[in-house]
Image 1: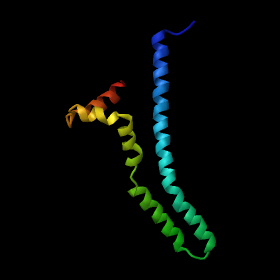
Image 2 (image 1 turned 180 degrees about the vertical axis):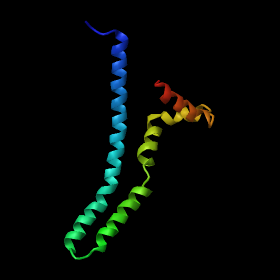
Image 3 (image 1 turned 45 degrees about the vertical axis):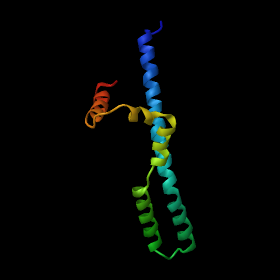
Image 4 (image 1 turned 45 degrees about the horizontal axis):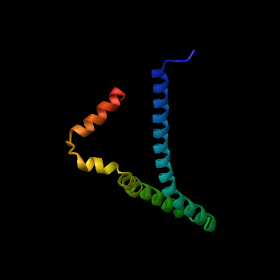
Length: 112
């Protein structure tokens, strides 16, 4: 016996939403890993080349923290919205400053 059509549609919607969410998270994880690789490679190379120096590890750890705190991902995220045409909708219609975040919060709370 097959479940009702509404339940199958709901199941498909939930699966698609979850996969979209995971895609966004994995994209962000890829960007963060990309920023962390260079200092870690430098740390591995210089600690192997100069094993007696203790300040090298602290330098590369500080470099890693500074890189992760100051990186900008707008060229990877904002420009994709421009190319996809998602920005045009936001520019053409006036959006109240307070109501747009409240609408997103309401949609998240209501599950729609």
